[in-house]
Length: 121
Image (cartoon, rainbow, N blue to C red; front, side):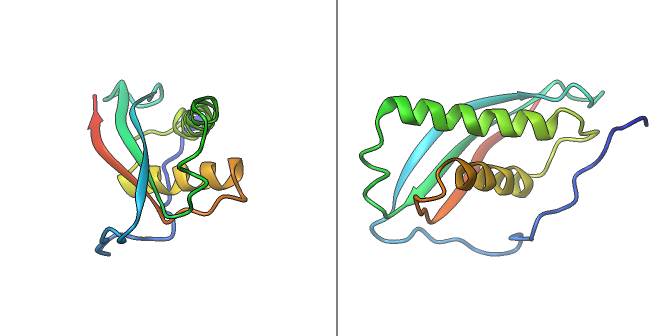
């Protein structure tokens, strides 16, 4: 199918159980809506992202920087999803989001990325 590809699973986190770390806080980005133009069966994928952290630098992040980070995450996810034949798994979306955050803010440690409220439309 001319250039369309499927996603290989990232280093797997499936089957692992996650527990909230005491003292951990979250920066939440709701309502991502990413188009899936190469997927004939679906129009888009919708989800929310939470970045869990203990580093206090995240708590003092200005609104403008939060908007910038959300845009960076969105841009990377759109680029990666635009040629997929099938919607990516939640693990893949979390892995890509994790990569986007590390590229954008490599000097700012965080505990984990959680993707939830996933809907494929």
